[in-house]
Image (cartoon, rainbow, N blue to C red; front, side):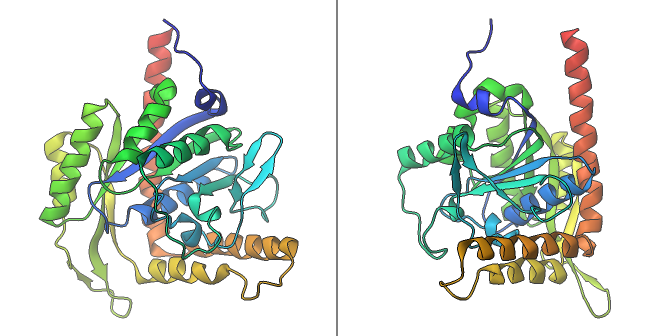
Length: 310
């Protein structure tokens, strides 16, 4: 029986893989993991096309982390145009981004919405944004398992075969307990899990290189082993990365009188510089291995699916 086509499935027809990044609790660095995953997938191939969708509607942070604060969303005859983080690079842009943060008049404005409005916004992000052809669409979700997650999976039901998830946790017991709830959710909705990332796994002193286990270490790896998940890797606290992502907030122009075209060009130039600077951090080197495991797993699933269909 054929799955009925919807506006979402039509819009996402040319998206090969949709990766939902989730966590059981807040404060585990899920958004920074989402941003790094998008950047690392982008860097994995000179032709890789990546999109990142921020559905953390009440706490959108992807625009700041990618140095895109201050951008607005533009409407075209074919829908909303995503913001391109690498628009000043050679050739066509390959890293597109969409977030409710681009729709706020001021980046400090709060988003006070009930469930139905959140649902409508997520549907619009999926069905009205001109995503085009993508190898990967990374979706940054709010912590927990709430309205946004249910709405997301409801709208993505027609493309369920292309969905997968990555769970982010920190090593301490409380975070691991909540990560188990997140895993339970993925199993309840039959969402395949690519693996688990243990974030904030130790702190590397920038002066002497000594590693201190601030939140203990190894809990995520043990959980992955116990639950039969692939352990994608550990990410220590990287002060260089924190400084880089925080500094991206200053990409917004200082004066309101700046011409819109000049403002967008200035922001694009600075955001592309941020991509280059990220590649020089120790986190980028570690995340290259994580991205390689993600790509390998997706490729294996794709080959298995193709073999079954034949």
